[in-house]
Length: 241
Image 1 (cartoon, rainbow, N blue to C red):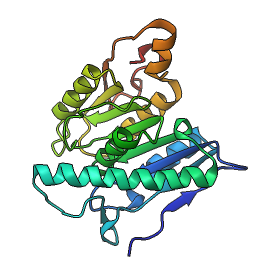
Image 2 (image 1 turned 135 degrees about the horizontal axis):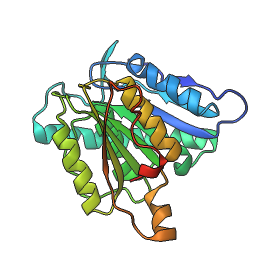
Image 3 (image 1 turned 90 degrees about the vertical axis):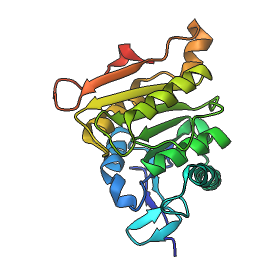
């Protein structure tokens, strides 16, 4: 049976934000513990939820039913998983009086693909961190009220960075709100450099819809940096979008 999600309550009082963290394929919430720790440090008033994928077995949970589907089967199952996740997120929002703007999704690998589908299908979050994922398909629509932060390792051979570039470019064509950060020397892993940059994006990146309302649309951009250089922590506030 699928275990209950792990809940990390806010440091005190009612939650101010909801973070839903999704592990990758054949894994469990333990895979995203470092991410959970970083979120807790940056957002102490957040409620953090770490669900298990609904398929698989202990320590090897998946978000889709088939372990190795073909391309169309993968796309269909990820879409179904995204819809199911959106329903769960809605239930947690209702239970704690939180809305989409105060909700963020973050996923690694298969979990990130599912998070993207949930945002496109139901717009359940104001922000989403998508780490090192093999996207099910190029988006046909961009979520109108979700800022998507794609974070990828340049040496990822499981989910090649070229596909992340394609998805980012496609989102730009669709007038979506997206950033892409690429860390050199990083493979298919929830690397500390990517986690750190994800937190920076959450804390400093002004949503595109806010820029458009005030100043017109800025250019979407890609930022590349070295994960091995302790002085290079990725782009700063001046590098938004």
